[in-house]
Image (cartoon, rainbow, N blue to C red; front, side, top):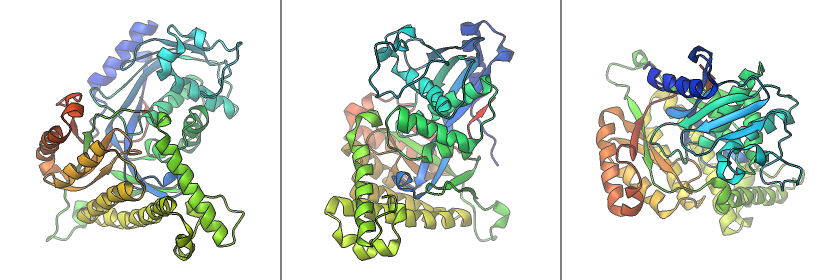
Length: 437
């Protein structure tokens, strides 16, 4: 198995140096949270409906260097954003979208006005999540956070990676022993309750439960998960060969926060409405209206009752769930061509049935499918911004990256001009779970 190359010793030392400058402590006292980005080859847009998803982390992500502050104050700086965020961990945090009272002084504790330090809301959200589950924090942190250099992380669960990073740092500073499954719930609180985003638990689950070289398979309804290993080389017959693969990340140049795009939450509501109609058509008025509570035979019997948009959302859910089941078998047996075909079909369904993805992302998806060595591709994340991912033969990965970068520049010269040539299409390997070093 290939060794992990991220983070490098140089990156870790840079983080320790930054915190040393902020906190005036020895570098040996500085800890670094490694919180990787995730990709979801199969299981797109079904986690919020209790579907089964396949995900894995990559060797890119969030680094958070920190040390306990020696008081209840948090002092945070970012490698990507301006300003310094300051607040106390004993302040009662309220959901971000809740109007603040005139007595709330949390904004005044920042060195910049709160609207200029919005990146600090994830740290406050971590405090909110821990407080809401009865953890009274007494120790803040002095921290420096940044994402992988030169990489637009849109569509790679960067928000979940940031939330998990702050949770792990605050828990470490306050000597809290929190399990990965508990932290999945805490990060859900950050995203769903504090930030108001109606997503599922796939992102944080992948970040907290993944293992290098494996697919993480999670049933988002029962929260049960397992790690899916690829077969070892020696398990293959002499006439067969285990293909080495990498993942391509192809950036679109589109940037927009999920909470600012009504399309995401609208589609979640449509899935729930489809579930309600199908359940009631079968005589079930008690089950929670999510599509995982609808049996496939009930869907087949009553899908004619759904209006066109709702029918498309339900079709995506049931077909994607089936692709996940087939994908598990393909990964376990090393049938990566079949796995790639399923990824491409997932991408098509996201466009045609879930109806997400703008023109640039759709163009990028189609270019990836034409690239040499690419076995399959789809949007990463919600499909309203960010990037596409592709499974590619390792031997052809560099050639494929050059092809995609060149062809995307032809169809979207304006967007492509805003992306660094060096990071427009990245070749990535498998990552590991979030951890404190």
